[in-house]
Amino acid sequence: MNLVVDIGNTIAKLAVFQQDEILLKISADKSDLNKKISEILKLHPGIKNLVVSNVSSAKWKLPEGAEKSVRVVELSAETLLPFKNNYGTPATLGNDRKALIAAAVKYHAGKNVLVIDAGTCITYDFKTAREEYLGGGISPGLKMRFLALNNFTANLPLVEAGEGHELIGDSTTSSITSGVVNGTLMEIEGIIGKYKEKYNNLIVIITGGDATFLSGNLKNGIFANSNFLLEGLNFILEFNIDQ
Image 1: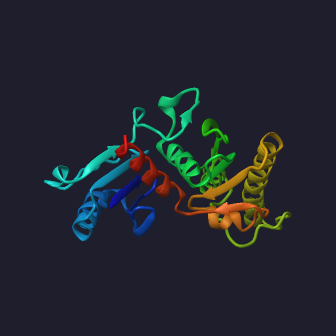
Image 2: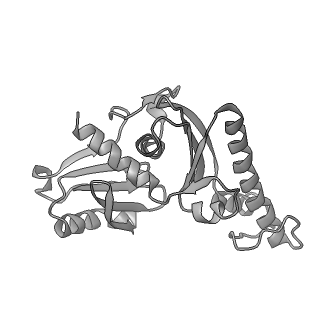
Image 3: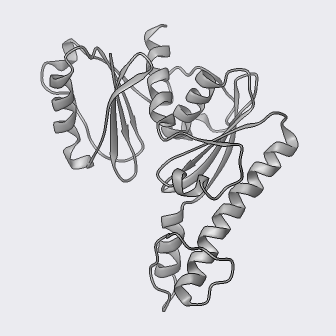
């Protein structure tokens, strides 16, 4: 049994895996992280392995005595990965992006796969059918785009994504929504199109906090999976345990 801890820019996510099955998944404030880890280890005494991905400055630790019974893999530039990493600056590659490609390898081996993570940032990560990670792209997420318009102008209000995003906004609020949401959707569609021009039989996965909202407005042929990053972390853990 494994415990996966994903410490993101905003919150932490924790999941208990029994092989490939998720038995428990929770979100936690980063200030509450150590307490949650302790509670989960008590609730699931069969946990023998733990993987931590930390893309923030948050601190974490095992409860006292747990280091004797729980093996820990903390993702770093030295962690073994189940794919060939051809990124030009591998030491700067985010743990979240490593995990997403690991999941792509596990569930779509021998395929060209583009993984889109729509969270604080929108990341694009691509692996070839030969399990080679080439890289991708990073752009602002929906919330960041709305915040930027509010922060870097004198009069534009802070708006959140809603149901409506008509092409022609008839107010300042609807114009912002149109620009941000439609611009993001067109960006994603355009990038997917460019990858499809270059790589045959491309599989596209979208995940992250805004995946459900965005995938519902994108063309067919895109698979939404909210657990893709957690599944990738679990695969990296298993891969390192087997070495």
